[in-house]
Image (cartoon, rainbow, N blue to C red; front, side, top):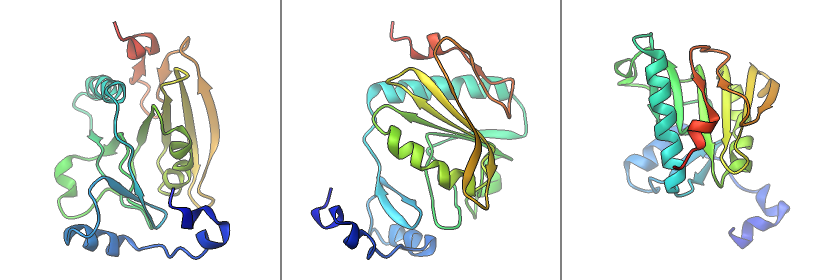
Length: 192
């Protein structure tokens, strides 16, 4: 952490940037590519471990198979443009097709998944951003504890989810929005 930011008084002086500024700075090469905009702050993304990559790949395969030819597509690490953020979730299920977003970013998603191998606290804090964007269901896959934190019923005005439950690896991880998406945690977490 930057020592200057360790002081609460100093953190209050940080000036957030707009999405427009963030996008323009990105086009000009003034910010790194391994960052995302969260509530007006440019946040560095963590490097991905091989286990993180494996879990994301497995989930995408399950999601794409379950959704088939539905009017939704599965996006990997693509930004969602909200009022003051451009989070890049590991996985997002978005209504429409990729060609619907040639000139603008999607503003919400039906289901978002963040895989937390070393980012659990950060991913839990992102719940505010996703709830404010009206994301119907938010999964935080806690790889260390082999469980799934499932948040649903977003209240976009209060930027919070009204329902939260934790599913253990003895339960199937099934989407509330897409009941056809059902993940066997034993197979998901298997490394054999």
